[in-house]
Length: 401
Image 1 (cartoon, rainbow, N blue to C red):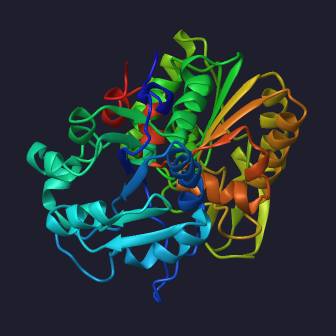
Image 2: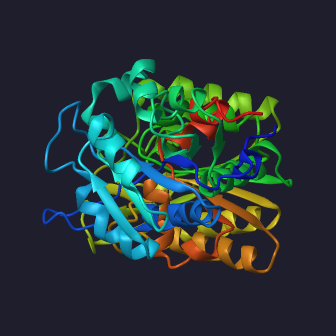
């Protein structure tokens, strides 16, 4: 499928480009940005547009203001970080539509960027309101979207805005779509997916889609407990695990679908049991038939790690969403770290294409020290998941040629 890119927009000299970015970055109580990744990754698009002679007006959402303006959720807090990353002056306007914006655009010089206030200060943004979208893009000649992480939302700035102007994907969104297409839609096979997470119910659509698409599916994290219970491992219970008793038949159905789809499902063969849910808690590795009735199952064991590594060695593409255990608590990050480092080594050797996404996944790979060694790390959470679930993303669909 072909999508519209900046190259399709023609001569941008002197034109005003509205860039829909995702600047929803983490911030502490002092209103200091604690991770600039999303800012840094949209800078190349801004620079390219400026090099082409365009005047760039950046719009974004931030936080959950629910249609009301407030200091806490103002994009004014990120002006300094955006300016530093960009190396150009950033002028902030405390609104995203109306006369203030129109006046600021008229006064813009070619070497500065305009940043408008939080789109979600208006309820019309989340409602996908067409009149709001028209008001938003009134100041622009061209629309560019670099907010793949919001592409699963049919918000005004993601869909209606693009329909009102000549539009295209920015560099970051193009990268995301290309990487996910290579990872899942048109991969080099065999294709493995690793899916972790606490509950089957939250990743039901994902699992149902993946068993029909991938060659090998690793199910780990708390959700694996439900699958193991469904297979008859009775030592797993609601006291020592995150098993969902009401999802046992669903888990069995997913395993049956996997069989008919010739998808090999890889489940834990050993688990790490801990006396309490806490860092450095007393713990031991146990086989599935030797699990104690109390305590907590917080990671997979070494046998499972070696099994995953062996199966991964047979593959050419890996898509990863979710850690293998309670990675935020040491030493229950060991399995995730070991598998992540092995995947990184295969990637560096040119033997594996690795695409990963989702907040916990990115944090886990960063913690393992290998985030920069994967083929591609997605900036998106919900959009990455919905792509893996096989769903059409409105913000991407609108960019089709």
